[in-house]
Structures are given as C-alpha cells and as structure tokens.
Amino acid sequence: MHKILVTGSGGQLGSDLVIALRRLYGTSHVIESGWREPSHHSNLSTYETLDVTHRPSLDAIIQHHQVDTIYHLAGVLSAKGEQQPDRCWDVNINGLRNVLEAAKTFQLQVFFPSSIAVFGPHTPKFDTTQITIEDPSTMYGITKVTRELLCHYYAHHFGVDVRSLRLPGIISYSAFPGGGTTDFAVEIFHAALASGTYTCFVRPETRLPMMYMPDAIRAILGIMQADASAIKIRSSYNIAAVSFSAAELVAEIQTHLPQFTCRYAPDFRQAIADSWPSVIDDSKARADWGWQHQYDLAAIVKDMLQQLEATRREVCRHA
Ligand code: SER
View 1 (tube, rainbow, N blue to C red):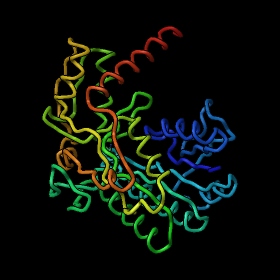
View 2: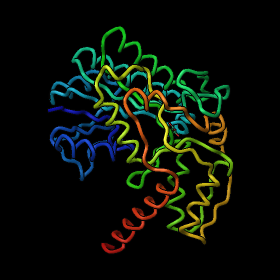
View 3: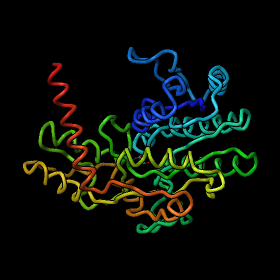
View 4: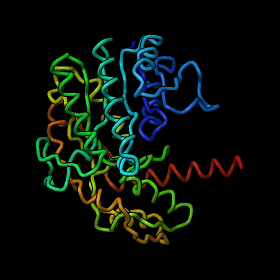
C-alpha cells in the first residue's frame, strides 16, 4: 500500500486531493504537509510542518513515514509570484529540485502540477499544442518551464517516475485558490451568493482554459495510476476541460441568479491572462492514458452554486 506525502496540502488543490487520496489509500497512508504550523484541526500523526526548500527536513519526513509517493503541490502562484519573484523562484525551483533529488535517492513516484502559465504572448492562443512556443512573461511561468525541464531531465537521466499536468484554472467550492490569475472564476461564485455583485479583475472577453475540481482530481489520479509505459511525456501533459470568457461565466451564473451583476475593473492580472492561451489541445493526454473531462460550463456553475448554497445553509444552522 502506498505511503503518500502531499506538500502544500492546505492549498486549493491539496484540500481536495488529500480527501480523494485518503478515500483511496486510507487516512494513515496520506501525510499532509505545509509551511504553516498545524492548525487545531490537524491530525498530528498525519501532518508535518515542512519548508520544501529545506532538503534535510524533506528527507527526514520521507524516511520517518517511509514515503514512496509525493504529490508536490507546494508553490507560489502567478499573481503572488509577480509580487514576490524571489520567493516564487526559491520555493518553486528549489522545492521541486529537492523533491526530485529525494525521489532519485529514495525511488519515489512524483506528481508535479505544471500550468498553462508555461505559455506566453507568442504561443498560439487557440488549440495550443503540446510542443509549441513557451515564452512566459511571469516569474511563475518561468519557474514552471524550468520545472518541467527538470522533471524531463530527472526522468530520462535518473529514471525518476515523475508525472505532470499543465493544469488550467481550477474551480472549486471547498478551498480558495491562493494568489492566481484565474482566481476570479472562483471568487465570482462566492460574491454572487453573498452580495449579488462582483467586480471582476479581467475584461469580459477574457477567455481562459478552466477545469472543475472533480475533473482535476480525476486527471491527477488518472495519470498517477496509469501504467508507466503509457506516460510518454515526462515534462508535463497539456490537459483541458472547458474554455469560457468571464462574460460567459457571468451569463451562466445569471441563468440561476438573474439579479446577479458583474462590473469589470481589470488590474495587473489582465496582462497575465492575456499572455495565456484560450483553448488548449490535450489530445496527447487523451490518447496516451485515456484522459476525458466530465464537467462543462453549465455543469460547473450548477454544481458550484448548489454546493456553496448547501455550505451557507450549514453555516447558518450552526451560527
Ligand atoms: N491557476 C493558476 C494561476 O492563475 C494557473 O496555473 O496562477
């Protein structure tokens, strides 16, 4: 049975991935970790405080828990990365390097989430193929390209079983994203239900690739469970579900909440969004290991509103 370490487990992806992994492998087989001290909710036997840039701490946790698999989610996202570029480089690059070195030493399997942020202003915007121009304009994107190259290098030179996906914006109801450019697509739901209005930080026509969290979790588990021979790309796979503009998202929410209004006040994140593709070609992931998404825009919006409503009712009941 696998013994799994999840770095950055308190983040948007980690919060849901840990639940899915525990369901599959059992609670005691999934160790959460993050730079924060454990909260009072943490189960101390399955939570470790970890700064991923500190290799000895990482090695100690791996050895102590006899870890054989790492989901390396710790990282600084695109918008925060522009505000703290040094930290973005340090955490994203040195953190992954430490994980890959540990994987080489202890023969671990690794998952690493890359991003559509590897692409840049000269990348074709539509049907962006697996191999194309990568000229990211953000520090975050620069670290993702470098990290993909590191993954490829460690896989081919040292036989490390590392697997990766270029994730689009992820939409989820259970945890907020932490400082990304696609965060508007999550914030908008909370605002729609709380106040009936939202100020969006990208223009209405901004079209980006997005994915609902259940699809993202299936994609991550799918690539990790696939036979090693099916994984032909060791840098990172293009992966996609839906693409929609901010205005289309607003219109879909309005089919459920007709009074909802959105105004637009683009900020520095507009330029980041403009540098990313609108529609990704993920045919390699579909062909190599059978990727298929389930949620389109209508299904995402319906489920998000239902789930957030249910949470709000629950909170009111306990207030
Ligand atoms: N969701 C991420 C971000 O906006 C993209 O990788 O930074």
